[in-house]
Length: 324
Image 1: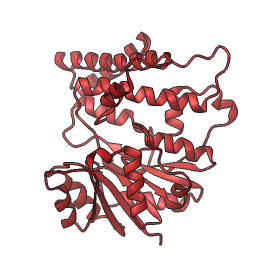
Image 2 (image 1 turned 180 degrees about the horizontal axis):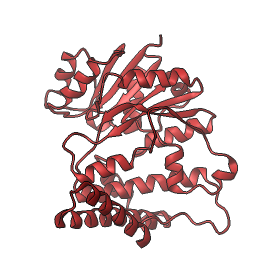
Image 3 (image 1 turned 135 degrees about the vertical axis):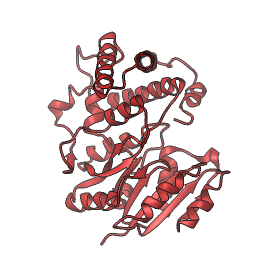
């Protein structure tokens, strides 16, 4: 049996963190190690984790980086397999961990595997819609193995296709230490998980989506947050796309955020809300506002990518990405 470690970065996780810790403690295949990397909590998060048997590693808040901090946690852990999750992702049942471990056991060429995310209990319509939209569509609980596309397919790979074929999230995932030792998570401001997935798949490994491993993980975010997130997300995706998809004559990077796409998303969200019986005039307006905010962020990112020096100084870009 491989030794399994769980690594969770935290900062002021709050009382709800106990639900995550309790769900981990009641898994049918308990972890061999639980490591918390805390960056300056002042609300008792480290003490709460220690009561559940976790080992806590404290770092200065200024040293935090999505890839950097997780790499430090993996290096400090002892498992052959390392689970990466976050403080607000709550395992949906007792098979969350065993399903991830079983997936890597059944797929020896896989570098990592990731869970299915579900909207948290009590989530509003928009939160539910966005959480499910970001999860690959599956029929049943059978694992789905993702491989690097052929050179023919790669030449015409769109932004959304790149995200789908290389999907991976360190919000709830597992990776092999042996692969991580060759290819650590990149130290980037955003999308370190997708960048890692692309890197290991280019080396010949696969990634497995495990629908049977489920976590409740969704957020109710402000419009300002969604504007920043859509901008930072698109900037990261454009950079990854440009790095792996060879430019061809007549092929333009997709300018997602066009009127046609915005209208299509509004129609789909409105139809879903109507089908659920939750469509109200207020929700109708909120759907349009949210989609418009996201489109503005994407449009600004597309514009920034076409300018050699971007739209703003690097310091402002880092400020936009802070907390995303």
